Image 1 (spheres, rainbow, N blue to C red):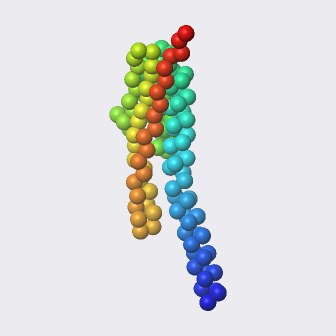
Image 2 (tube, rainbow, N blue to C red):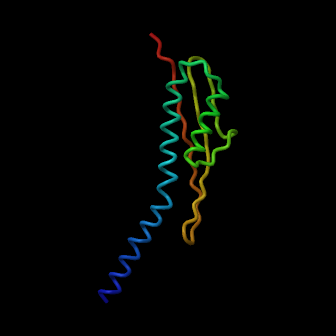
Image 3 (cartoon, helix red, strand yellow):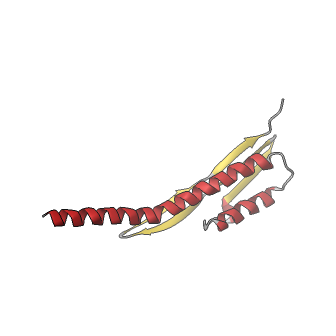
Length: 115
């Protein structure tokens, strides 16, 4: 009986580690993309870089992180001393017996600092 409990416990730990192995990378990549978007929003608020160039930079960063982000899914808006960057994408993860779609929507908004 002890052996059966030990095997079941070990199987549970291995299964949990495998699920973590599959789910952690998409969440970490989203975290990195969110960080990049926040940084770009702060920096590009004060630049004259075009909306298309900013969009291309976000898509390039996403591709570098293996994120399936289409250029049409990135919204960049300038106006009245502010810059907004928002996007949305879905990552499909095949868990054993339970495929799941993880939906992410990183974004940021920044305003000019005036006195």
